[in-house]
Length: 202
Image (cartoon, rainbow, N blue to C red):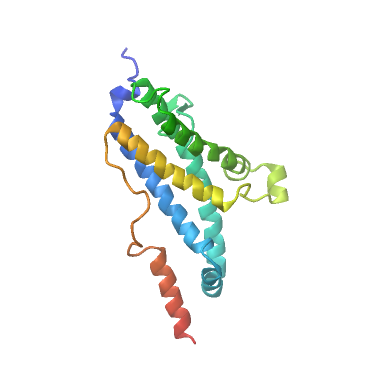
């Protein structure tokens, strides 16, 4: 009976990183959508309230849970339940195992630590209110907070830095995780359409 192939035998390092980086980009775009809708000021808040208050309230809850889960997913352990996970710690371990990263990579280590530190802030609400329903937390309605929006913004800045540094180490061009400009059909188009709808009724 043949043994189970190691990660390096199943996937190249570049293949692994390309797919992980796509996850970074998807999560970043989702967070930017959330941030634009719920953290961009009173004008946007009033627009959402005036057009579809309950929809945007539900969407807030969905996006918050999705972002928390996404952060925990990409920062999860390299393997669980006998299967490998595509995660930042898994990539970091492989870079070390292949001799690409060693103790001299101080800047990369600091960026890795910064990304991983945010996990400790989101893991408790993930464990108690999203992946499970902890009775005390649910009855008290603790919410998914526990950190300031500035800490979340810093996480996504650190994630971009980690992606850029890992790209350079692996020999790939860097990738901007967020769109360079508002893309057609995105959240800006939605807000503009809602604004036009409000104006037409005046």
